Image (cartoon, rainbow, N blue to C red):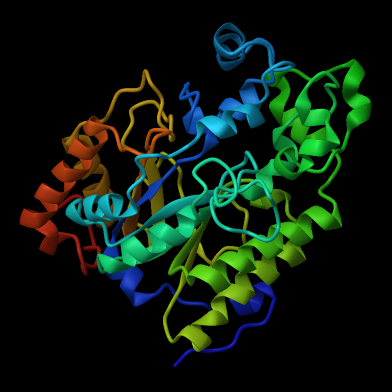
Length: 380
């Protein structure tokens, strides 16, 4: 039933979108990490990037609230990330109530703090902060609700995320390279590229080392082997990874179908993978017309693209979220909806209301969503 794949794009393009995914339509994931402590936007998950960049709102907030980053670095938030009220069963039950058919966490974001018990870094949630294998706990609870389990891996961007060239910051200290990434481009100390030139930073910085890429791939294989996810979502940053490493990551996962006797799916952003080798994701967007290929939107319950919990963020209406789902499904797409829990592990009440509202609508109208096929003309 399941075929073998080779680490070539021509081979990987023959992988078919799983039937379970085509029928599921709707999933939920979470952005929960050290960045949930400062809880400051507009994009909370980029706080660790912007807190080191003078002139950004998050830098100004950091200096005012915690002190200059030369005295209080991102690592210093970790003891404050305790997750004392984290209840994976409660999260999973809520996702089930929302009508999601698959769910899971961001397993590692750009910040380098790993949310599972990994052999590749001591900077992980099992050893620091909550001192729990968050990915493992959610995997058990989500599957117990009868849902498929997914993980999001955003760690390719870690190479470019922190300024290693600003000597007074802890990001340039080799003692913390396990979190901030392998030191490189330290000769930039004189000109300190500004936040406004982020794209220029990416273009001019050294390419990832073999050591970094091996660890990047090793973490992926570790997650695959330990938690057997049904879906892996790769955020941007994948485009910077060498082609062979990307192919090795995908083929390792696809070939697990034979061993596990189940279908799996990969989603990706932009042009990071070869067309047809996985399902493309349009973050905060969607196609304007019916397509003849599968695609997915990932968006968030918050109304400003905060992703993680941000104190000042508002929330979308249930009707807006339902419209997003219905519009996607009518055009041969799917929806992955994000929620950002607080640092203590609780999901904000307005976010819960959004999810429960989705569930109430799907309880009445689910037969028009689950297991459906797009009609010839969308919007009818």
